[in-house]
Length: 336
Image 1 (cartoon, rainbow, N blue to C red):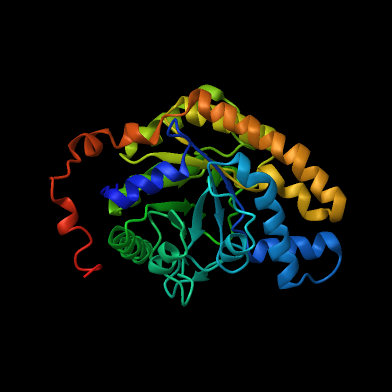
Image 2 (image 1 turned 120 degrees about the vertical axis):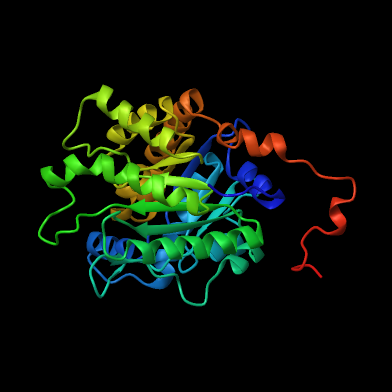
C-alpha cells in the first residue's frame, strides 16, 4: 500500500464522503465511448460531441458523487473550465493511454498517456490519479507492468496525490475469451493474486473487478468469500468497478463487496450506458431520472455497508504526527 502524507490524506478526504466511503462515478472511457456513440447515433461523432456528453454526465451525476473519474483527452480539463464540476465533488484523472498493445513476448502492455503526468494532474486541481493496468500474474511481461506501477506510485508520492490502480485480468491464451467458463473458474484467484502483488508497490486505493464472473457464479456465499479474501489479501482500501454489467447485477455486487470489506464503488456504464444512444431532451431526461436514481441507490448501499477508507490506514493515521515546526521543511526540495 502507499505511504500517506498530508496531500494524500487531504485528497482521500475530498474524494470520499464524510463517512469515508467512495461513491464515485467513472466516465473516463475514450476509444470505446467514441465507437459506441458513433454506432448508436449512426454517424461519426466529433470531439466536441464527446466533450458535451461528458459535460452532461458531470452536470447531472457529479453533484450526487463523492468524486468523478474523467480522462484528460475529452473531459477532465473541460469540466473544470466550463464549471459543470461542482466544487464539493472530487476529481480523479486518468493517466494511462486508452487500450493496450501486445508485448514482444506476450502479455498486454499498458502505456502512459504521452505529454501527461502526475505533476499536471496536481496542477489542474485534481485529487487523485488513476491507472488501468492489464495484468496477469503469469504473463511474460508481468514484471514490466509492475515496474510501471512503481514508477507512477513514486510520482504520486512526490506530488502527494493518491494512486488508484485498476488491474484488469485477461486470459493468456488468445483463443480463450474472458467470458469463457474455463477462465471464469480461474478469475477469482487471478483477481486476488494480482491485488496481492500490485498493492504493495505503492497503491493507495485498489479499483477492483468483482472477483467472480456474474454469468458463471450466482452463489452469494462464494462471492462473499472471495470478496473477504480480497480484503484480507491487501492492506489498502478497495472500491468496486462496474465493468459494464447491468445495473441490478452491479447493485448486488456493491452490496456483497461492501459487506465484505470494500470501501465503496467507482461505477461507470452500469449507471449511464443507455444515455449513449440518446440525444437532446431524451438523454437529459434519462440522466436526470434513471441514471441519477441508480447512483443514489448505489450510494445508499455503500454508505450502509462500506468500510471507511480510514480503517485500512488506521495504523498510519495513528502514527501520523507533525512537529511544531513541520512547515519549515515541508515540500523540500520541490518548493525551494
